[in-house]
Length: 188
Ligand SMILES: O=C(O)CCC(=O)C(=O)O
Image (cartoon, protein in one colour):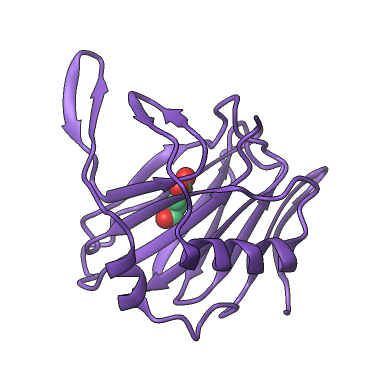
């Protein structure tokens, strides 16, 4: 697997393995995941998240959304095992947040994956379907690193959650759906 560095910044790193999972079929994942659209409560108002999501792993909470523990299916366990073998994080990844962007109107705003139960040492995501731009931004300097993620790409963020935010901006010309499976280590 060939690794392309996106960021090397002190102890923080982001790298990508292009097409590492390109032989995986988009439709298989579309059908295998129990997608739902959550409502986010922010400043006393409710908003539908601009994407569908699902969770497998120990109980986890972000913003106003609480995911109960849910066992990984065998397909997800197989993918997780392959990613753990390829990335070799110090503490194995054990959970997955799934995002389905139905088209380019769906998106994810600037955020960090910095909930206390997540080990920030390694977060690894795999994308299937439409190509989309993923952007990383340094929280202080505001420098940005855009990454064009395509079907089957593996993106790994190591110790990136303290100093950097990331986002998946809208791209109104994109008509096709995209799935992103973000594997994390939930500390017990
Ligand atoms: O869809 C993506 O590539 C980004 C997903 C993401 O930022 C997240 O799940 O925290």
